Image 1 (cartoon, one colour):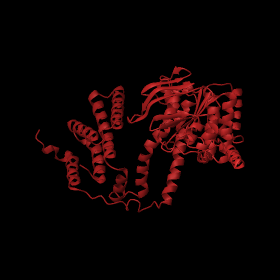
Image 2 (cartoon, rainbow over the protein chains, first blue to last red; image 1 turned 30 degrees about the horizontal axis):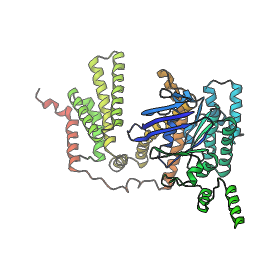
Image 3 (tube, helix red, strand yellow; image 1 turned 60 degrees about the horizontal axis):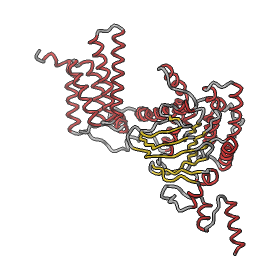
Image 4 (tube, one colour; image 1 turned 135 degrees about the horizontal axis):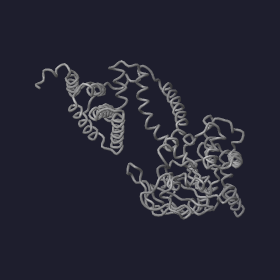
Length: 268
Length: 224
């Protein structure tokens, strides 16, 4: 469980970035962290991972204040995938890159092999073990970042814009895996994204930040189908939600939307 | 007071010579002037940190000299010289655009365009490199590597990220080279920039530079 209590934060230059943030993410949740560019999403997620510390307020991970923690102290519990995949590559081969975390944590070699294999398989990178990570495509590097985080079997995953740069099939496969991980293993997922279709389909809760303030916390249905000023917050409703809203029906997916439209047609 | 990049380059080169020919009092005065200038032009936390860092480095140099048996006054003067020379470059960088420095090097010192660009690119890469190294260290820490502990351990954590950082810098420079080529980088690159003429202030400063640089020749005429 991650909890932010009365968080205020400013970077070194002194410009405030987050104001009075209060939120709680329970174990096993699938949360989308949304907002326009510069709204403070990444900053808040960095505080969750102890990459930065708040100027005032508390971040609690499993009920413990992490003010004196460094990211390495949380690496067993929380996996963090950065926005820029290039900057997190540390090793010379895909295998070694994924094995880096487990090796630092001194896991037995047998466990390292199993974890790396499972993570690479899950992210569709099987067969690339011996490749030099820098020659991978942007999408593959992103998935490599996720695989590296998965290799430590964290209970929570913070994923910063991992859906960017993926083709439709890659994105769907990765999101389905994360969904299964969330549902079957109870892994908490905190997904930062600008892709509202992904939010609509996978997230069970959406948290919206705008100009450093938390302005919404609720289900994606409440966000997209209610009368929330999503455009003013720099978001765009998914096409299905937009159409459904204009037709006055409720639909979470294309299938549901078509079903509702068919029903409407039949009723006429 | 805005000086031409050409004047700044001359002043910077002159200061590096002055620290060896001028007496201690004069070098100390230059240091004070440099500090006033720096704080006048850029009174930011970054600048204060840079000056503080240089002061610490100077202190270490002085200590090293003392450890190797130099007398205190020689060590202190050595440290002061180094500090003044480094601050001269910092003054130039704080007050002049890098593009203007490159243009002055090409136009007035007839340095080949490629060399002038190398200088500006190297200076531009420093903040990028620092930012990248910070993110890579963060990524390392997120995967369980603790930077806590003694200086040696922290140094070792840097060693691990040096290779990926260098590889990334090389990749970036390749992209930069390609992008420059596509945008017609060549002999005319700096010639197309507006010409920056020397002003009266520049001439006045250059005269002072000449006067101070010829100190060894006229010092014998000074009253004792």
